[in-house]
Each structure stands twice: as C-alpha cells, then as structure tokens.
Amino acid sequence: MRSHTFPGPSVDEWVTRQLSAGWQQVTATVRVHATVDTVQRWVAPAWGAIEQETTRTTIVHAGAESYESIARWLLLLQADIEVLEPNELRTAFVHVAQQAARAAQPG
Image (cartoon, rainbow, N blue to C red; front, side, top):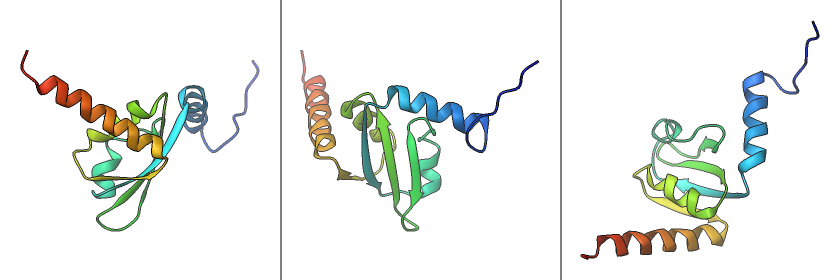
C-alpha cells in the first residue's frame, strides 16, 4: 500500500486550500464590527480567514465565486461591515440592497 504525503501541516488544511483555490474567483477584505468569536462561527476556512484587529473588530479576508456572494453571506453576521478592498464589493452591496428593497415592495 502506498502512502501519500500532503504539503502543509494537515490533510484538512490541504483539502481546504484545494477547494478554496477551485471556487474562489474573487477575494475581498472587510472590517467587521464584532468580536472575533462572533465572526468565527460564520466564516469557514473555505470561505476565508479571520484575524482579530481589536477587541471589538475583526478583519475578514473572504473569497467566493462572486462579490455578490461575499456580500450576501457577510450580511449573515448581522454586524456593521466596512469594505477595505476592493471597490467591486461595495458595488455588490449596492446591488444586494437594491434587490432587497424591490422584494420589500408590495405586489
């Protein structure tokens, strides 16, 4: 039986990197006004990485197939978000907000 070695510290990390590389077509960085513990439960390693900035803010380095996908799942955090980069994510938030506003209109 042949054994395989995986680059990196663990098989889990290697698989996560491989999956992320396959579907993360765009990336973005945001500041979330929430604790790292609050943000951590919403950001799986395949979606991105988080780092504590202060005791009340967390930096999220996110990736997905589109900026609108990133905008939609970041809203699940239910916290104030500042887009650090890129501008395309700001535009995606505008599109998501417009779609939500249309959904709120009667008939």
